[in-house]
View 1 (cartoon, rainbow, N blue to C red):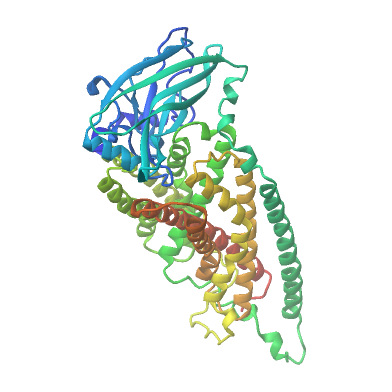
View 2 (tube, helix red, strand yellow):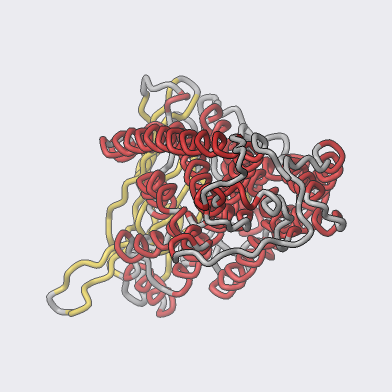
Length: 587
């Protein structure tokens, strides 16, 4: 099995921090006639991006000696991304052309013919790598046949590789295939290849530009969506500022006015001011709320950090570089989750801080682990490269146990001592005030569901580009767009949540903490509903394997997005609530 053949050793953990995300194990420079490796990677149905298998799971020509076939390990992210690079042992030398040459022979028997036919019917493609540049091709084709309703299955037997170089560096590789041969039991197929080297003026730093779909990602609709979201931010922030500041200013004036006859209108005695004795009451399930808010704050910083690193370091050029960077940055930012969670838990009078710290450090990783465990079991059953090797699991666990968890513990201790002091503007009354019945649209559930609509609207178009890049073989590189959309999402989420919180308090409902969290977190619900639409309308995925991975990965993404937005919404509402009650006279 795949996960048995690629165990990872603990020393590789150290090499992870030496930057598999930012550097290669070679300088990408070659001398004339120096050997160049062609690595075979994976094969699978084109319409199912995650359903990939070892290249030699199909009866292709094996290396002359399986023991001498080198494997290339490119980092933790590469393994988690389902890559397994094996030396093809095809002789290629820098700047030396090779005419049509036989490198092996396939003797077709009934089992091999059946395997190849199934692969062709399912539109199987394969992936090679040369000098970290990908090459793609199809296993074969189904040609129309007058004598057969199913058509004739043919397999390509010749691979023509064109390599462009600039001085001593490889700039571009291209693979074309021809000489299709029918699949018939008992036939012998000569598998051949040819190499042609051409010089080019393209610089090494621009060699990945050919893989970037500029017309798609920089389409006019993409720019328009950014402009539209930006205008939404201006309008929303302006509207919130105008309405709330005007309303609050009037409220402050009313409550500051001292009447000699001590009589006030009934309408003047209603609203958010009346719940000042309960608004800072500790929320229900404080441990859980502290954990999700701390985790969400960490995820917000994590996304910002990874996007900035992607902009600066062009992480899209390396296999698994984004995944590696995400895992390392998540571990290193765990201090933030502990600090935010510990401070919040302590300020609300929590006594079981160790329980809060453990939940904060393990909540999101174990949620992802639970989903990943189910998907990994499916991948192992199918024998797919998507199955995570046991050694990789150990490495990820070690990173969490020895880096993420201690940093979360340190952050919790610092948060309790530096920001854990109780400093509420108003004293909490002993007896909770009864919450009056209000109209249906002012209930917490409705406020929570409606709160996610505008944030989702601000990222709707970007979700299409992100989903298309992940599920349809496009390289996502416009991280500048992503940064703008992320900032817009944060601003819109805070504004919408503040409005929802104000409406709730004005309805004399002081249970604003969880409502503000769910009001922002509901954005993830709409993202997941959109993913269902995308699956059935925009993709051609099929089968239990790919369907499970699609909705499993999307669920993981939506959970992270929900926790992130929920934390941002809560923290924004918390600042708003503390600010407005600071200016009134609390009894």
